[in-house]
Length: 123
Length: 148
Image (cartoon, one colour):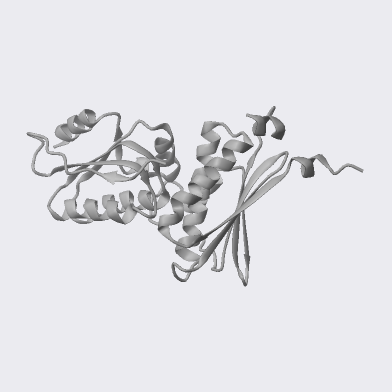
C-alpha cells in the first residue's frame, strides 16, 4: 500500500498567476478525498483557474476522489471557467478515468511539461 | 464417498472491521492477499481490489450509522471463482449510472460491474450484502494457485 500525500504547491516561473500545480501521490480513497477536495477548492478560491494535478505517483483513485475531480471542474465552470489538467501514465488510473467518464471533462497528459505547454497554448 | 472437488478446494475467510474510512486500506490488503493466493494475475487483482474498495466504501458511507458500527466481509474461493461479500446493516443506496456523464456519487456500482465478472446486491430488512465475483482464469486450478 502506498501512502497518500499532497505536496506543497509547485511554483513554475512564467506559468502565470492563474496556474496552480498540485502534486499528489499514493492511494486516493474515501479516507483522504476530503483532503484532496480542500486543497483544490483552496486553489480555486485563491483565483487559480488552470489547475494541473500531477498524479504521476498515484496508483489508486476511487470513485469518491473521481467525484472530487468532477466537482472541481463544475466549480470552475460555475465561477467563470477554467480547466483541470491531469498528469498520469498509470494504466489502471487511466482505465478508471475512462470507465467513469472523467476523461471527457479533463485533459490528461503524460508529463507535467506537456500539461504546462497545453495550458500556455490555451491561455 | 469422497466430497465433491469444489469442497476439497474451497477456502473461506472472514474479516470484521469498524465502519471507518481509515479501515479501507485494511480491506484492500485483505482482498489483495486473497486474490493473489487464488491466482489472479496483476490486472485482475487490481480490478478485484478496486471493486472491493468500492463495495466497502459504499457500506461505510451508507450502511453504518456511526464509526462504531461493524462491516462484515468474507471471501470464498472455490474451483471456479473468488467471491467477496460485504454486509452492513443499512439500506443499499443505488448509485446512478449515467454513462459518460460524471456526477458525484454516480460511479460506484458501474465501476464494480465493469471490473468483476459478477455483482450481486441482496437487500433485506436487516441490511445489505454486496457480492463480487471473479472467475478463475482458464488453465489455472486451485492447487496450482495455492502452490504458486
